[in-house]
Image 1 (cartoon, rainbow, N blue to C red):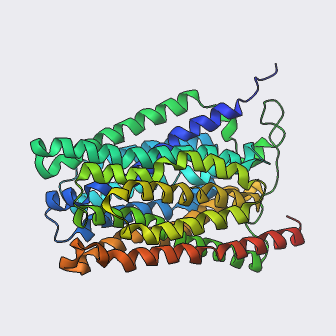
Image 2: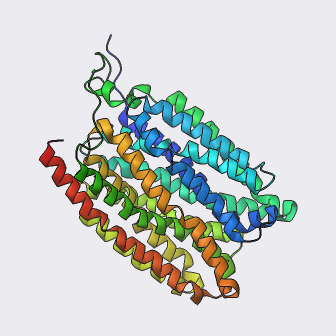
Image 3: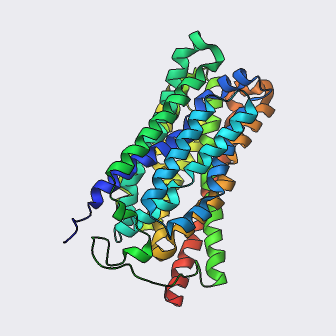
Length: 422
């Protein structure tokens, strides 16, 4: 009996749901920093921003191990398990009685969040060979939705509950979002076709059903030291981009509330505008980059760097438009750089390669949440003056420019891969 054809487009759109929750959880805390500080009685806002740094580092640390699992196990099952753990950690955070337990909860949530990118990126690259940028760009819509919905929902919900619940108003939206993630995981487990998640050794020539799995020997991630060095150069370079992007969210949350007088609701709306337009730019630039990856990456990141440095200089009423345009360019770089990396390696090692990429970039890049909180604390009374933020935003823009050195490493990887015949 012939098995039904795998519906690849439907699976791609289903991954958008998982991608949305993965990133929604990573930004939902941003408008809530000051409420969390008050609720836990923290001495500085830097302790509140530390929660997000710990969550993101907990996401990055296990990524290589998860990537190894994604090269050997069914990727669909890994995706479901990851979102369940992520949702439970976020829901548990809403019950944390103090900072210590809150840190435990975000570590659990971060661990769950580590499953999505190695498994989903490798799976999509395998299913859509030849149009990887377009496919990852469509999947990137999920990140746009999550990044947009997270701060706007948590900020609005907490602001509406604060007159009733006081500083603990941040807990209710966090609980609700955690429970919604569990429902989404169940939906994906029920609807998604398990054949799409088969690891590489089981998918060659057999993805549509029928046939026996291939018994291919395992391969090394990179066969030469030069390729390893070029890969780490690529990962470290783009960690500067990640640092700038993460820093933009946390720094802007504090900048808008302290120097522009925004409340949590409008702070959430402003932060959401960074990601709203990326629902258009991710698939748009992702598709165009299939015909010239490096030049498109370079163009969008230079535009984002200029807008990021300019942001604190613009009048208050231009806050949302400038953040939206900055996000339009900045966020679109992610599916392009991911596609470039996936196209440079064999599917049999894609999970490990992307997991290691996330681990390096996530470890370095996501320190920015804590760094931005600490920096704002050092400003003291000047934190209420917009001009005090000029050098910080300029430094973030410079970090994006530095990340473009990764394109040199990418070119070297592609050349060396051809030379070694992989």
